[in-house]
Length: 157
Image (cartoon, rainbow, N blue to C red; front, side, top):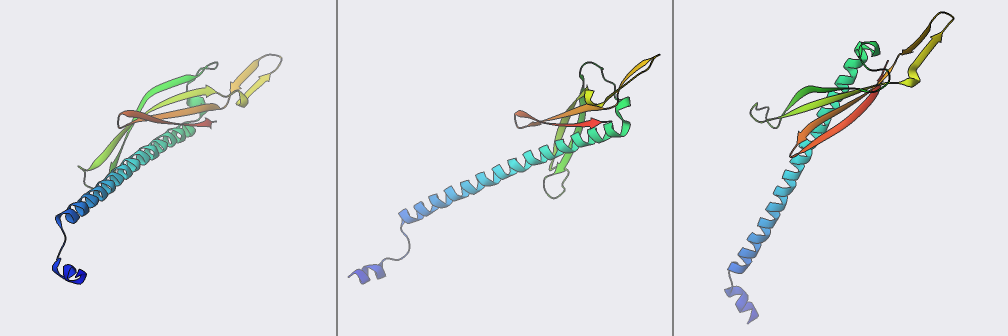
């Protein structure tokens, strides 16, 4: 009798089809969410990597010109705002319409480093000279509805 019922039953019922469609729909939505979050993470990492590149470029250019060419106050910090850089990345097949553009804003803080101070005094004159400056570069960029930032510092002699 059981064998006869199994032979008469052919195919799937409507309930089984609906349940399997719902399970597949949930799996598809989970994979879609995973892909979107991976994309956001990749864009965040690219933005941070670009900011590190900009900060290193600024520090390298200041190293080239030297501490004497960087204007700063002797007693307090000197801040320079408003240096903007733009970086572009292709998202896919190097299609110019499908690219990401990130605008980075830098802020330099120059501190005279007392550790690198020389003083010569003789009978006729006294010289105090700071021969190195501590440079802090803060790079900010927008990501979604927030402002991300990093800070890198170095000594320029």
